[in-house]
Amino acid sequence: MIVVAGGKCVGRGHAGIATPCQDAYATKVLGSVGCVALADGAGSRKHSDRGAQVCVDAVSGFVAKQFDTLVRLSESRPAAVREMILQCAVVALRRYVRRKKYGIEDLACTLLFAAFKDGHVLAGHLGDGVIGVLNGAEVRVLSLPENGEYANSTFFVTDKGASSHLRIYQFEVSGSVGLMLMSDGTAESLFNRSTKDLAPAVTTIFSWARKLPAKELSAVLTQNLEQIFRAKTSDDCSVAILVRH
Amino acid sequence: MNEEFIIRQQELVENPTPRVPICLVLDVSGSMSGDPIEELQEGVRMFFDAIREDDVAQYAAEIAIVTFGGVARKALDFFAINRQEVPPMYADGGTPMGEALDLSLDILEARKTEYRNAGVDYYQPWMVLMTDGAPTDSIDSAARRISDLVKTKKLTVFPIAIGGAANTSALARLSPSRPPLRLKGLNFREFFLWLSRSVSRVSQSTPGEEVKLDTDGIKAWGQV
Image 1 (cartoon, rainbow over the protein chains, first blue to last red):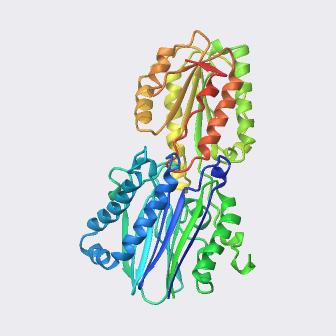
Image 2 (image 1 turned 90 degrees about the vertical axis):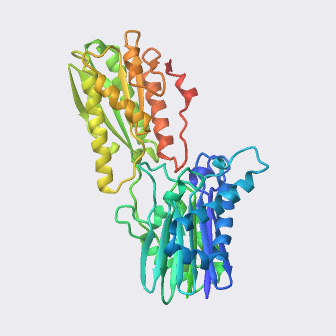
Image 3 (image 1 turned 180 degrees about the vertical axis):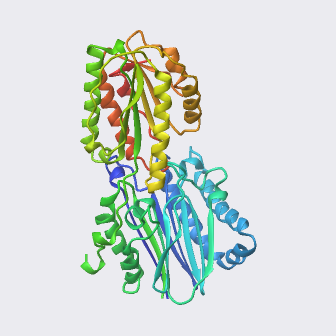
């Protein structure tokens, strides 16, 4: 059984200036494929909250539908997979701005996704945030943040040369598996930047997926983001998880 | 919420606050004696106090001071601001600005290396140069280094002229992206309060966020 869930909340820094939450996530289950996607809109871009949502909706749907093709290609032509994912995101963003008075640069956002089907995992990551993976009893980092030199810099799907920063992961697993996507705001609580390890809370959150249905799990994740994680950062916080048990 | 589904604080990690390294490069040559050096000292003290009172900046801002008056020297090294004291400043000697700027660039670079080695994130470093005169040594090397760093967005530099005798053409060579500003009278306090607010904004910025300077606030202390 695959459980997908997520939550998000506006950061203290944004709440004070009436800026919407610029993080977005999407979950998708299509037959035996489960997929989660998460994006963090660029701080100064006017409509990056919408860009993040458009991006995760498009990419989660695309990856869920094209899972088998993407997994097959990721072994022989990983560059093609990167291009297909980015193309999907950029086309969706272009479609969104068609009748707007701004360009897709105003929708800039990072991108994280993870999908699972029949023992195969496919994941991708562009920019900051972290992807964690649980396999059996082991929890580890699958993908590290890519920030550039400074704390307030990272890479976005709308950047020139974005495909060189999109990292694709494909591997097989047996038994239960969990995948967790987190924005940089959430990573402040769940990822140790010095040791590159995940916090014990990641294991705890994965364990909740065995006890709660998706809807309740999403509510619990949102409450924890609002009450616990938000206190440790001024940034927006979001998390999306996929667990197969 | 059911307590079983609440994350406990001890299950989370503690990450260090990303740092904003700031180097104040201050002219303490003989011409600064009297009111200018006293007002400068008081302005720096207010800067430290304002940073200490800011919830985020007090953990993010790290300040070093390089003075130049006769010789260039590191008067204060980077450290947690709550454990720093503003050093006393005395006006004396010539204006070895080039040497002071090179020293400042060296210590900023060294600090960034220390952050990287310790796994501490950091923001673009800031350099604030304040002078009431003209350099008595060559600033060629420093001007070249600063220009390269500013063009590649690796340094934010604020050259500030104090009084009418400051050589603004020399300062312009050190500020490729914006014209140097002249302090109105001895408004050091207003300048340093503005600087503390700017540091506070940077220390709370998130990826992709362009931090715009409070240009209206500049009018309270400076002019082009």
